[in-house]
Image (cartoon, rainbow, N blue to C red; front, side, top):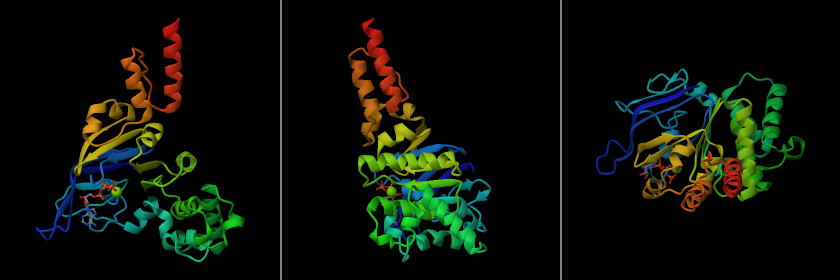
Length: 290
Ligand SMILES: Nc1ncnc2c1ncn2[C@@H]1O[C@H](COP(=O)(O)OP(=O)(O)OP(=O)(O)O)[C@@H](O)[C@H]1O
Ligand SMILES: [Mg+2]
């Protein structure tokens, strides 16, 4: 499903001039099916407000631009939000806080029951098992446990299982690696790539972690004060170091090292992923010595 926003504008508390707050202003952005798309920007720049439009959690306001997700026109009053939400999964920050059922299996099944009431119990169990196994947990070991007995990392996986159980085509994650240790973060990103290689066609990731963007995203957009500042590949976005600093953003370690090496006369033109950076740096250094 292709996502296309045109001049999308959104104002919180629009009716009261005294407290109204324009969070998005003329945001135009296309995300193609198949992308692993990053959304970055300073705190308060409108990232969450934008992504919450994508499954209709925040409705497009009157005369405030347009938004379509595949065949769903979110500008239309009659948009079938239930059908949309089964195809666009949304994972919020600290999703583990949203677990509520008595057992893991009931928690994961909840999303499925909400969207696909007609499933037999056997089919429901098959899908819940698949979702739990997809997030790397052992179904038999965990299915009857209370979600509250699990570790933080396990809880987060159960929460993700509850979103992917409907096999959404688009998965939107708002700061999914916040609070994870380095190993947890790496494992989590591996899980996202596994999902991207199976039924999830498009991943949209909001993050403050620039290394996650350079390592994983096909393209990314910078939000600034509710507007799109720029869109491009991580290479294009992170090559403008000064501009990012001005925007209050960091750059990935690889971009920083490339810049420092350039000052020493070593030109490493990598795509900013760690593996390509290491490969090209080694070649540049060895080549320089020959
Ligand atoms: N429920 C709300 N009511 C009123 N204003 C809000 C609400 N949620 C967000 N805002 C305001 O809208 C603007 C954009 O907020 P948003 O949460 O989209 O930013 P963000 O880029 O996701 O920030 P962060 O990186 O901190 O998560 C901010 O000025 C914020 O204060
Ligand atoms: Mg946010």
